[in-house]
Length: 110
Image (cartoon, rainbow, N blue to C red):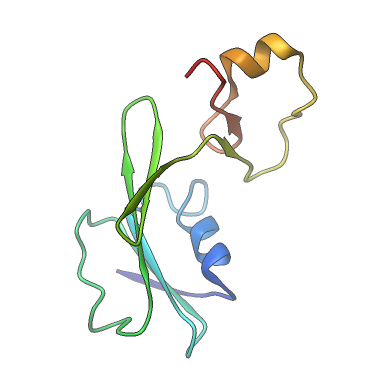
């Protein structure tokens, strides 16, 4: 488990993504100490390190970005990390999807 300074859950979520951390499976934000706890371990136990914080776990399917937050599963349809990819696209590209691992739109057909 890695500990990094953090300002919020959103800040920790960004640190749990490439290029900051290549293989992050889960994270927790500890608001009292303003710390992000990050791990590559799939079912890591955060209970002693973050007793009052929520744990956010990611489950990655080979083709889909799936995120598990507080026991609920969500599919990520848009992600912007680097901000280098232009989202000014035609309708067909929004239907099919575009981007890479860090900046993407999953597509209406997916």
